[in-house]
Image 1 (cartoon, rainbow, N blue to C red):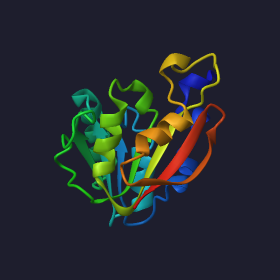
Image 2 (image 1 turned 30 degrees about the vertical axis):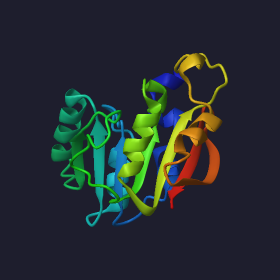
Image 3 (image 1 turned 90 degrees about the vertical axis):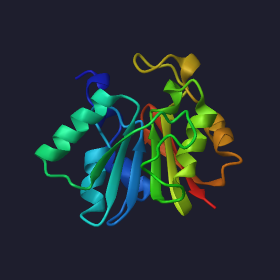
Image 4 (image 1 turned 180 degrees about the horizontal axis):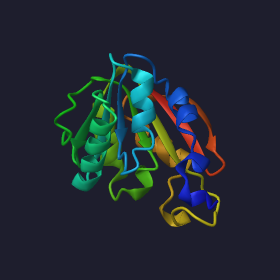
Length: 185
């Protein structure tokens, strides 16, 4: 199978969500979740009935697909949120300092304004909460985004600087990805 055809081969959702600390009753957001909602549905199971998962994306069609699937699977704890993460306080459905965990997974490399995206994402995370960044490694691969648009780990750390985000640890998120977990202080 082509590695780019199956998200599970590139990133294991259960492993990534465990690294983020997703747990029963948590309020979680997947910023830039994408149409496959690769992390949204597994997170929905992990947070249970007392938790919520905000599926945040800028594309209405993506959110419509997620809404339909959530309805079909009776996932009442998934809340689609339209937002342009490059605009501060655009995600009006998620108040400041409310989330236990926010995740930017394969999202930063797509942004033209990474600083604004990181700032808007951090705004929603409560003190003591966590922000997970997972991005493509800088190594050349036969698939994935061009090396020129990839976000190096030190660049991700620099984006977190000044946002009350302190690095907890970094890890190998998969063969082609790295992960950095930050804690909001």
